[in-house]
Length: 414
Image (cartoon, rainbow, N blue to C red; front, side, top):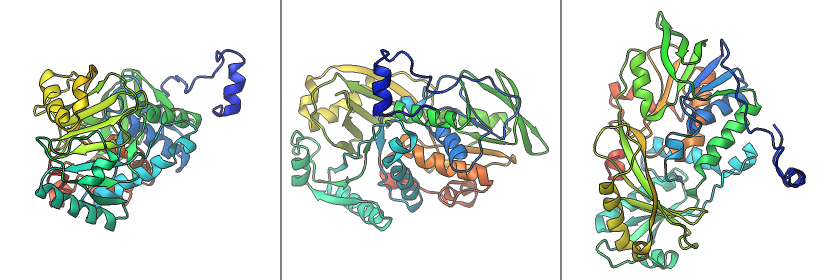
């Protein structure tokens, strides 16, 4: 892999930037691998990279049925934070945030991580009490969160309307939260993994699993059969379909999550703003677009389309909080397929099939966990034992009752 630098940029500028090497190879599927990762999104590519870089497992393939980052990695609102109430959640998201902070340098690829700070607004006394509890829990887990007044919110966000139909009474502020470029994260991990010998196979769909005596032996794909003794499935909302091929069900529902962006405008918002009370979130991208999202749809579907009803429910409260938004045009709208578990927490687990691991169920919080999820999942596969940070998210919790109830903790449906 040629290293990106100011020197290489200058050198290639002399030839009109026509001789840059490909960021990653397009190799054929080999007959066998030590580990196969099913799913070429951020989590899957991160898993493959850490397997090769940190754990020395380089005979690895990543199988993606479409194109890299074409699923939820490219269909989210790019927020990175760790302000979760439950200890297990806080640890894995904080692990991811800490890795994001040095990711551009580690991958030699600009993932455009911006720790601009994040505000979770409180609109009632109940919201303030809930935020106070969350701040206390997070600070005990070493997360930089504080409760701030409405006046300080106004100082940080001069354009906000504190006395609208949804009055702002304060906020929880995480100093080191922010955004990253979703495509940059996927491409950075793909390029770095490829340089370590990982085969990335696009347009390769898994059609079946070869299992004998309760042990995984290989996969059936549209590119042919492949032998392997360890498989990590990281396929987001489609994980339940792949689990059904192996003969078991995952406690998971797949629903669309919609978002939209406005036309580009000059810099006006230098923080990420979230509200559980009216359930909207907002940030401004480096291109100037306002990136806007809300809650998941109420029906199960694999649709990746937007809808007018969702747009109306998102924008109505947002225009109350930020009146200038009413003058903007919507540029585009999309949906991602999120996988939601009963306790609204992810699944990182071994399965009843020896050698088969699943990483899914992230709901609406998957992107922010990309680096942390990939790292602990790679450790779990390499060592054939779940990483301590991943262990609480085992499938076994649905039998034992040791759930990690982030639905109740967040005060929202997902």
